[in-house]
Amino acid sequence: MTTTIDLDLVQEAARIAAQNDAFRHSIIGNTPVTDVPQGQFVMTCGVAALGPDAQLELTRRVAAFDGFTADSDPQGWHEMGAIDLEGTTVWFKLDLYDVNYQYGSPEPSDPEQTRRVLTLLLPSEY
Image (cartoon, rainbow, N blue to C red; front, top):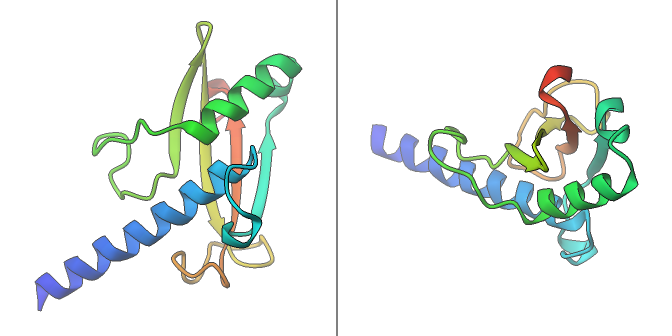
């Protein structure tokens, strides 16, 4: 019975990771709109202060990011990463909310019950 539970958790993590990847890819239009989970893409004041060229480059890098490892992504959800832009470290974080963006999602692997918020931030703003 434990094997079934573990398999279910692995499958759920794979579904969440695929949805998070689709959402990240969509921020630069690489995913058909029908395949994209709903959500918002935001950046902090610190990232905005880097200027429009940096913002565009960071957006491209977040969308293309594939540096997830067991150490940096222990749940396997593809929800956080770090990007180095000319010596400045910028993090991205995906949070999964309910449809009203008020609480955590009751069922993170169900796109009908989950809304994503992808935030670009400087480590000092965490």
